[in-house]
Length: 508
Image 1 (cartoon, one colour):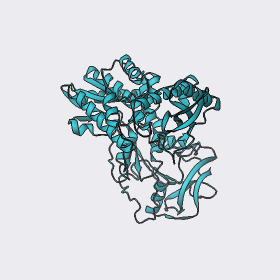
Image 2: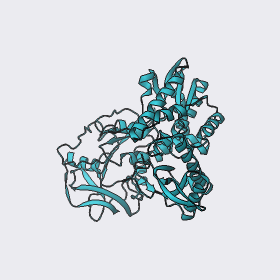
Image 3: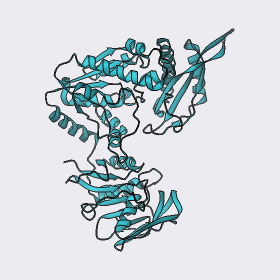
Image 4: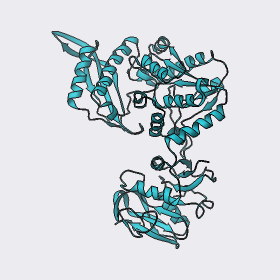
């Protein structure tokens, strides 16, 4: 049985970061809501997350720790630490001033196993409005800051600690080392959860689950579906059938390039040209949400039509990854609004197939590590995220064949330019938006009245927040010149320097 660390979530925005830091230690961990978890012999230790709540609130999350505290190594982070103090004989009160931001941690107990080889003074990140003013009688302080006397503490006689700072954020300069002390030294985890071990165990599980049945997978050309496909292929070979739909809204030559890449990987892929259907159904529609719904509906119809031609298919494979799983089971429940495009559900119920999700335990960076171990080419693994509706939401207003042509040409110049300049891998996502405006220009001795496009390039880790990339002026000037000279129908190029929030990465 795979050993693991259990992270109990009280709704903190940093909970996923804790998991990522533990995973970076090659230790498997799972996030579960504080009120819905199971203990078994695979659990080596437990971490209590932070929370937007105060432990003093009437509606503050409450957890029964009787089977954990004193039985398993336990680490409370921020709210988790304050909960341990408040509920086992200590006292938590509002801070005189909000304790937020960087602070310098000084060791009090230099031999304590949680902090033993940290620097005598080290930077940590605070984020709380309450503070521990009195510890339970059987606790001792092991570290303090200038403003927070009880920055870290231990329950004597048991493996239970609390820390009023966040070791998981990068501002805590030795936070990963502290987590390693807890996870490896105290909990005794072996650090054996590697891409190789994941592939080996997943292949074994897939073979046992699927047996001799056939599996259907809708490919997008992106990282998640590609890695899922190769992993499934390694497990069940030709039992896997993939469908790749050309919506007519892909990047220039993308259909041919992707099909060629998949062929080189030995995948059994059915390619479907369906651009005419999508463009016909989108005619006259300008509302962004309606466009998304049309594209999502058409994708399902095309996919279903192709799937009906196949026999003995029992499973539908999906490229679900761990952040999707966490969101659907979080303390706060699933997201209230889900984007209406084809990488969101709908197919299983309609097709009456069982679901298999080979990547549901992995974060995005782990998906790439597994893909690299599977020898998937960098052109696929390093590919920027691309929206499910494709260029349909990068054409503001009505989508037409001519607008798709214009945008494909401009987008290719931009993306090829990023690659040839060595900038592509420094950008998380990039693309061109065709704006619903025209402006006056002068080309040669003639006045023109043509389209304007906006270039967009951002850095991000998960797409939830993003900053615009400070691309070199010379590069932007060259791209702008190339687009205007080579793409008939464009006479103006602008660069989007908005960050998310408030602006989204896509324009629609």
